[in-house]
Length: 235
Image (cartoon, rainbow, N blue to C red; front, side, top):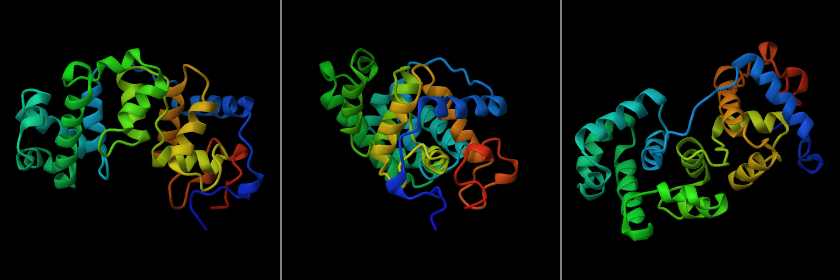
């Protein structure tokens, strides 16, 4: 049995009503509060940080990011540096060979395709969200989750990243269709999230996945959502 699949047949799934989403949001608020974070306005930094976060923990990601920024004075310098120098800088983050090549490819692609040939993503703030999503996911190795992080955290645009924690918790709660692909998860999450609450719902579902709704042996007994979760005590 899948550890993330709620106990209902895929054919019986229905998109959750706004009332149910609000109820889940309110219960999570009681546990984790309402996270507040203004968009930081550095989309390339967010993009690189998200690439570095893949398959590692937050501490290693941050160490790798700060080492990269200390070694190179600008993103142009990272773009133009040999891959092995980028790899050496980000080695604490793990999988450094793959990530260094990906970061360099992304920065080159931005320079080749951004308006005016500049290494910049600030212009995305003036684009409709679907257009901004399409541009970011056209970059090498950038998927919807990474694009969502850039749009939400850096530019304050309406998108909701779905990482493994959000996917797991949301699927167990019945917010997502069982076995839905990640593209569909992102579309559904964006559709059901009340406007203006993208950051809150993303972060609180993520926190719940890290602290209670574990991939294996979720702590259903102490879960604030157990009474509204179709998967409670069944995983």
